[in-house]
Image (cartoon, rainbow, N blue to C red):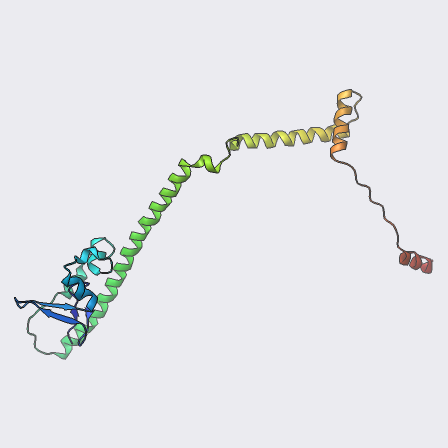
Length: 204
């Protein structure tokens, strides 16, 4: 069984399928479907149609130079039938197919990795250029924020020392009154319910 390749999209044409066009100079063109046949009659370039294998190779999406492609070349040499030769050929085809799929997968992952790096660089460039939209104009720097936090902690510690010490100056009394106003004391009163009182009387 001989499998042909489509002249336009390079896909497989199985026996009994597709369209065959013979030109006046006896050159045969095989097409897998009417879509490829119409594109050929319109004289379209396969490299400009995004759904063809020629475009994928032209755009660098598929492998173009690989040693496994040498095995696909048609060799019109008559070979005497040999069962051992056919078995070896079939085993070689399976091995070559595995090697090719592995190399194609590696090629695709390498191409996608470059795209992720480009997108990340573009995002970093965009953040650098438009940081003024993300960060408030009056925002302080990180070191200044740390210093402000440290100053606030120091003020709280000073306020605690003032509470422990009893001062007679006017400044200390003002600070104490301000602190009392800021943090009012909460008194908790516990009231016994009627049932608890009855239980206590019974126990006595």
